[in-house]
Length: 231
Image (cartoon, rainbow, N blue to C red):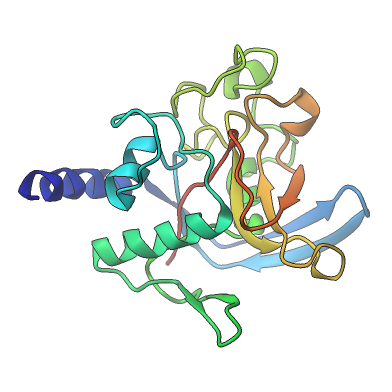
C-alpha cells in the first residue's frame, strides 16, 4: 500500500502539472449535418495537455483491464460513464471537490463551479483544439495526428506528434475524446459527444469541427478522454 500511495502521489503531481490554462473566450460551433450554428461564451478553464493514459487510469481506478501497467498510450475502451466516475475518483484522491453527482432519477449532473476534474464541454474542447486559429487543423495532418494513413492500424503513445500553439497534444487523431455534452436529446436521447478523430479514421474525420456521438455506455478501441478543470 505505501508503494501504491507513493506512485499515485507522483503521478497525481504530473497530472496537475499538465493542466494548462485556457483564457475566457467566445466560440461558435457548427453541426455539419444539420448546418446549425451556436455561440458559447466560455469562462477560463484548464485542460490536460494529454489524454489520460493507460498507466494513469489503471493506477487510480485499480481496474482489471488488460493493459500494460506503465503504458503511455491513451486509455481506450472506456465509456462516458466510466470517464466521469474516474474524474470524481481522481478529484477525491487530489482533495478536490467532485464535479459529478446524480439526481433522483439517476441522471448525471455537473457542478461547473467545483474545482475537481471533469470532462471538457465540446465548446471547451474545440476552443483548445483550434488554439486561436479558425482552420480545421492546427498543422499538417501527418505532423500532428495518428490516423488511418500513418498509424499502422494501432494506438500510439501520447505526445509523439507535434502539439498545437497552446501546447495541447493529440487533439486530433490517435483517439476520439469524450465531452460532457448531449449530442441532440430530441433525436438521440442521452447520446454524448466525442471529438477529434482516431487512429483508424480517414482525414475527413480528423478535424477540429467534426462531431460524433454514442450512448454513454459505449466503448471502442479508439475512444478515450482528457481532463478539464474549472478555474
